[in-house]
Length: 445
Image 1 (cartoon, rainbow, N blue to C red):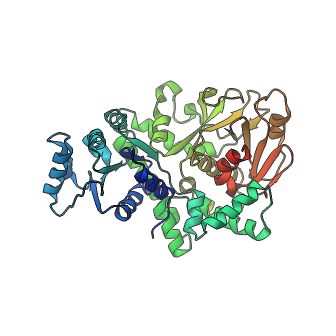
Image 2: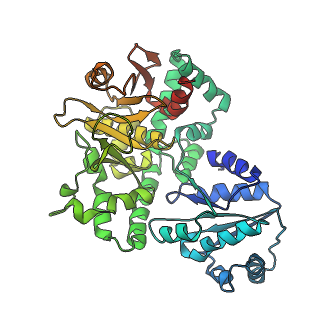
Image 3: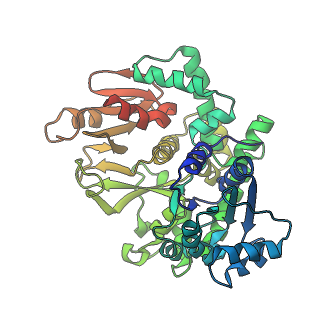
């Protein structure tokens, strides 16, 4: 089953740009990078060449004679004489680039030559990525790809772009959705929270229209990630990375969800785990959400790097880290105490990240004011409260009305709520989070 992805239209625009640079598509394993690039190459070019440096090790030698483009092409066609190459009508796809750093070094030569388009991708889990970056500075462009976001999941379910545009118009006009729209979208969002956005899992779920085998596939991906950590962690302590990775569900299950290195292993200290959490983030496995020192702008210059929460980089992987009973509970929309809040926070963090937001939260030293996420528009800092239950909004009210929070002018509450605005904050159902950045940017126009 071919899944429509947002990268498809982005790649078409990239091809149309006469100044385009060679491209490196970054992202975690098994999120659909190869399939998306392959489909683009086969449909948009007269000639498409795909080289996998792990499965086709013989191609690692194509750079042995240097980086002259004609020589590289000559070496490729000597290995496989059936390959056809036409200047200005050929895409060369170097997959698993981490297994052949010379492939990245060649990007400068391909850009200066200008006759062939080149895209690179691979499982860049910490290994050699700094070397890849240094070898191609100024001669490549990066694209960060994620697992399916909720909009792509809606496409997979058969929803049309005009239907999603209609939903957005309700947001823009602050008009509640109808009861039937709310019911239908809640149901699909419930599926997304359980299934997640890994393409192979989504394809199976859509194809068979039930959850059988989904948990096992999620658990296998988690195991695959552990194996990749062991394989690619390089100079970092692999045991420490695994300790952090395996502890994520434990801390999300706690009421404050704060990740504490000191409780990961006996005697663990922040200074001995330097770089570990960042490695997992760079690998695309986790999203880090930092606590702001003060709820004020600018965000990136105003957070505590040792005070953070960790979320899985795909909502389905959190479910896969739990047990079958938890998955069954979520399918049936049962409240299973704190963990229901963790699941909603995790999916919201993922939806914000996939829109390009860096993740921040706020909790003051006395814990009298705390907010799940903080984003911004052009002029304002915006607190976002995620409510697993429809309860009071004391912290949200304080942050909007108190003079001490000068950069905050309004807020957002996400929950099992319809679209609305009460003069202080907007209310949106969880499933509309994927449209939040567009709403906030167009709100200011």
